[in-house]
Image 1 (spheres, rainbow, N blue to C red):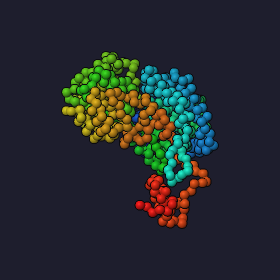
Image 2 (image 1 turned 60 degrees about the horizontal axis):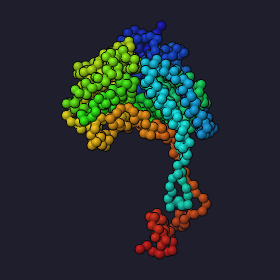
Image 3 (image 1 turned 180 degrees about the horizontal axis):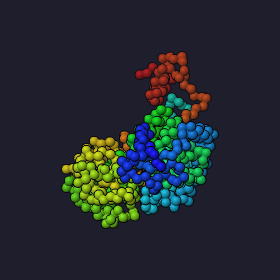
Image 4 (image 1 turned 90 degrees about the vertical axis):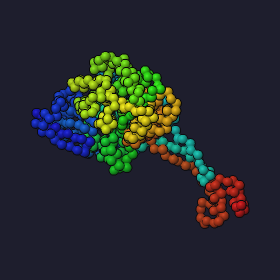
Length: 546
């Protein structure tokens, strides 16, 4: 019989609810469902989460975690021993791991789709595009370019080191920890791991327990396909993550929200460990009246509801348009929603469900807030048992409302109106810098102003989301939306140390470098540093400076 629920928040707060208090949780049903941990776990966990993280968990524990600080310490020591052997640094090892990774995805594509459907009811087409195709694309790029990425880069030298040559050598950092999230559990786990392996590191992946089917499959596949002496998966929740964060890593890569990002960064700071934080924020989409309305509406709907039903860190979080243009935009969005999901979107098989009951309750509370519930102009339907909320558009919600204060991370889309489209810039700049910012316009001057005046992790003109697919662009946040970047060679660079190396022979020393110092040596030194060949010659033959 269940006697208590251990509720941990942000790995820093905990409280225990008695069994009599379980009824107060309301609709957080204690049941073995697809939201629970895999059956092989002896402890059953009803998992809940704030935005883009596994930082809140309601756990019913029958035993303590088996992965504790002692095991984490042993894990890191074993990995360090493997790394120090030089095994992971070789081109052959890196290629072998990337080849196995690609094989792993291609041979288990059907299992990946099943896990994603179990965790998120993610449609197969969407799963292929956003999880399988993008991950295999990253693998193939790394396999193709790794030889070039690993080659030292020639660097210029100066007259003060003549004769000499110099280069920049990319070397692996060492032992890295990747803490992934639940909304794209394969892409956001494997993409950074691909970069870490390409750079020659030993890697530990901590997948999100909020997507248990995906986490379990990742653990199984890593054991079967990759070098288990240097590449590990640790499953679990707060206890396991805490044990991992107590260790000294050479880099930590975290995808999630800012609150947990601060915890990650504080833990890393104890060891002076560098971090990459891929966070989120409220990504704005400005829609000018001077635009192709039908195309703009289609691309907004695709980026908001066609990508994991709004559970995407770079999905449009809110729209800003003019008061005069808002009715036309709403009509266009409604038409595209019908084209995408039919007259009854709650029944559509082309839309993911919400990850769990916690998020369903969080989103419905945003909709039901005073001065917000009467602003719904499209949608608003909900089904708790199916964990679904229909695509919902709200017009002119108060900027002080909760829906405009936190990242929505779901199928709700507020529209704010302004008198002039340029006024949207002030609204965006009054908030934290977003992970992505979008504008739809045919006005070239407005495009230039948007790029110049709006700071964001990334930016896309006249579309949404798809800048993520361009591997020649860095993907990452700025300010509270994150730090560091990855994708393509940026992933390789993020998990590498750029070591500067200067080569010299045993000839060519200038007498100006060594004592005893004399006025003549000083004149020659100044002439050399100035680069004035005429003065160098004058100094060498003892002529005074003009």
